[in-house]
Image: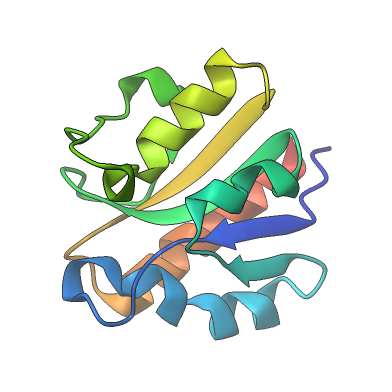
Length: 131
C-alpha cells in the first residue's frame, strides 16, 4: 500500500486557468486528514520535499483528472531567462541530476467544474492509497 503523506499543490489563485488546485485544498484536507496538502509555488525549493513527490497541478490539454508518472511527456516552455523555469523543466532537471526518484502528478484540467475536480481527485488519491 502506497503511503502518501504530502501532496504539493501548485497553482496561482490570481490566474483563472491556474487557480483550481489551491481552491481544492480545504476540501481535500477534510477527506484525507492523514495527508498534508501543501500549497507550493517556488519550484526552486522542490528539492527540499524529498525524492518521491506527489503533486497536484493544473494541466492543459486534458478533459478529466489524470495521473501523470512519466515526466518525459511534460511539455517544457521556452526558457528565455531564469524567471522562466517552470515545474516541468525543474522536474526534468531534478530527474536528470538524480535528485528525485519518482514523481506522481495529479493533473487537473483547466476548465473542469470544481465539484467534478474534487470527485475525480478524491477517486484518484483513493486508488493511489490502495496500491
